[in-house]
Image (cartoon, rainbow, N blue to C red; front, top):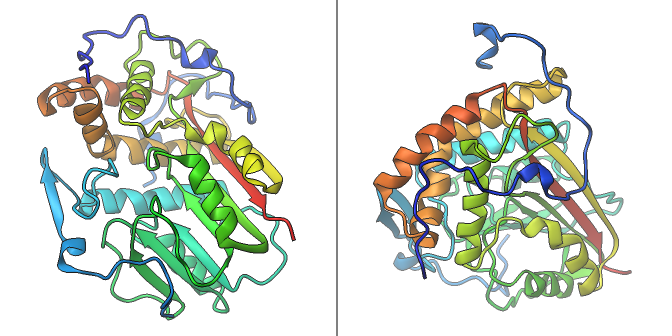
Length: 345
């Protein structure tokens, strides 16, 4: 594939603000200068589709100084090393803050006997869910064996690829997929397999970021590094066949697969602590930490594999991106799409 040359300045990228997306609440910015104190806050599933946990499944692979999964090598574009695991746990806190401590938003009224956690990562969501729902059995799937050895007895971590055909012996009552954008080549097939994998009346819920970042005023023109970064990230993900704007299509894909009671809600994560509202301001502080601290890992594989950049070119480019991510005069935010639906009774 053709390589995209790293820009010296991004001056002609389309404005993210011009992209038509469902609008969440308007976020009012803080007036004036910022003080120093604002900078920080401070069960065995015998019939499942799981592959046996062979030594190859447990191996990892190094690339450009970061560690990645070796099982189904190259399928997932984010690392699995300690730094990324820390970022994933911080991201879990962001979602908890966004949803006021709730682990999901679907209007589920029936008991959840079997739950599937798609792309469990460090397993933190599955563990919290298991603690809150001791009556549930949680099957938590990932390509990387980075989950803790000790977990509640009703959680089972499995290394598997959910792009393959599902052969679970029993149906699920709830499927949860968080931050899976950029992970699947064929989202309609995932929706169809989820529909078949759910018991009648079961629910599925997605929570996902959408690229590029947005802005509701004129503080993030196309010439900013942050605006250019979001567009390049989306381009890179499209070139590897795993676009990072996939959440904008979940609602229709769920409906096409046969789901009912489908609902889409768009939340906002401010890029920094620029909002006046206290909750949005705190979200912005944690979002900035999530991005700035994890930017290299979040970007490396997409830019080097998708755009043909070198590690050194990317590192130089990300200096300006980090500066914009910290700049509270840029009122940027990341759309967070939550989409859920129900299989008919």
